[in-house]
Image 1 (cartoon, rainbow, N blue to C red):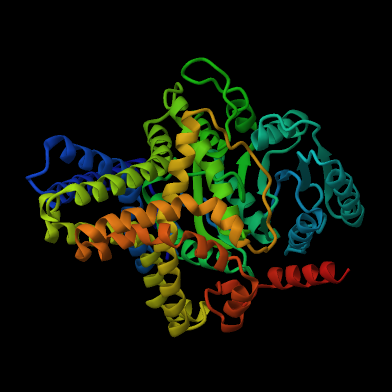
Image 2 (cartoon, rainbow, N blue to C red; image 1 turned 90 degrees about the vertical axis):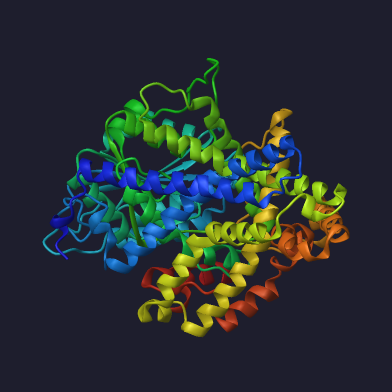
Amino acid sequence: MNHSNHLPTKAVIRIRRCIFAGLSISTFFFMIWLMYTALSTQIPLTLRITFVTLFTVTLPWMVIGFWNAVIGFFLCQIYQDPSTIILPAEMNPSDDRAITSSTAILICIRNESPERVTRNLEITLQGLISHEPNTSPAINKHFHVYILSDTDDETIAQHEKSCFEKIRQRWQDYCSITYRCRTENTGYKAGNIADFCKHWGGQHEFAITLDADSLMTGSAMKRLVRMMQSNPHLGILQGLVVGLPSTSAFTRLFQYGMRLGMRSYTMGSAWWQADCGPYWGHNAIIRLAPFIAHCDVSNLLTHKGSDHTILSHDLIEAVLMRSAGYEVRIYPQEDQSWEENPPTLTEYIRRDLRWCEGNLQYIHLLTLPNLKWMSRLQLLLAICMFLGSPAWIVLMIVFSTAIYISNTPMDVINSNPLSLLVIVALFMWYLPKIAGALNVILRKQERERFGGGWRFTLSFTIEMLFSLLMTPITWLNHSIFIVGLLFGKKQGWMGQSRDDHSIALLDAIRQFWPHTVLGITLAVMIFVSDPKILPYALFFLGGLVLAIPLAVLSSQAWLGKLMQSCKLLSLPEEISPPEALLALKTSALKTKVQ
């Protein structure tokens, strides 16, 4: 397909956004109407308004995700390479022109295992120094690695210094490597990168940002650099990130569905967001000059004029880059750009709550001057992503209570419209994953990448059951945390345990007893009122009831090994590992033996 025939002009982007807005708004009001018709006319008006209001708060993220997935699904089916109608024509990912710019590779770490970071970095460096046609093998003038540590544990800091000095000496003839450890974690990760910009930012045109658990091949990095070189108006280019193969049962369950949903969702969002795309804070490339000039979030002021330490810095940096006149885009294709995901439900919650606190800070930043309307919408949607959770929990509590105290459930609901509402809501919520699954099933090559049709179908079924259980657990986590925020409790930026480990039963009980108590209480209330409603309710309550055994079971090493041996929930990189991951596995085994 001729790339140049599909240049998305400003007029085309405006039309796309109008189409997307029309679809989303009409779906939004359709869902509100469905909820209204599912409610009995016999309930008091105030209670009906409560139901509808709570349900309305849950809708923005659901509706946006639904239409992103629908559009992305059709783009993936119609075009062999959908990025040809998403990216400007000059940003051809297959371009192999020489790299002439200087790029800093920023690896941000804090109290991490140096060996893990070193293993990933070695893979990247191997790709960066590979010979290319008609180019000099001297790569050191084009790429410079900066290991930016915020480690405050003295033992780990000393180990870091030793490990990274060894890798610096080993690669000094091919690529410059600089290690720096800050004494204070001021501004968290955003402050870490701001410190780099202050000391070294002026020496480079671009920077590729990586987290401690990130892995990108040299070819993927060079592709981003070439795309950045081709478009001087581009401020941030985010690469699509997928999960690394894992031995953890929880990680396999969690990232399998994420992998399926990510491509269709991202493709659909890129279709209408265009130059107001996302930035996820890692596995992306940024243009340093405008980033330094316009994207310093370390001293952002709230609407009340007070300083605010931003936890989720990435989206704010994206909207500030866009307000400065530079494009923010995503390359929505899988391109050997990976990350590790949490090994247990507990670690997932720790990371998720940090994002929750960070996204809710955007409430104070909605009125920042000179933002584009698309940027304000992105901030608002990021807020709604987490505000929808307590709305779901309160909705379930109010619904169960109303059913319990009524003479008959028919005094509260109309059964047929309620059935339709539940089916439609579940379908919309999980459509990104369903769309991703259809993209695999409808293509023989994709089915083979995921281990064959029957194995993929079984894996997808298991993942969907897991997702149904995980969703209400996540809702309640967010709800409890948001209530804590209202009373001054903060999550902050804590370190993560990235290695596989099991969760003890007592630890699971201590963390998830509120989920179990609430789930059982609401289930009993509904069962006493009308057992026929309980099956519908369990779609939303089942995860709460089973939170403790789910946390314990999904952390067990034997379950992960069983999944591996049966190739269940295996990502394509596990079934047919690329060269980079084979080298990573070999390196990990050597480290383990040593």
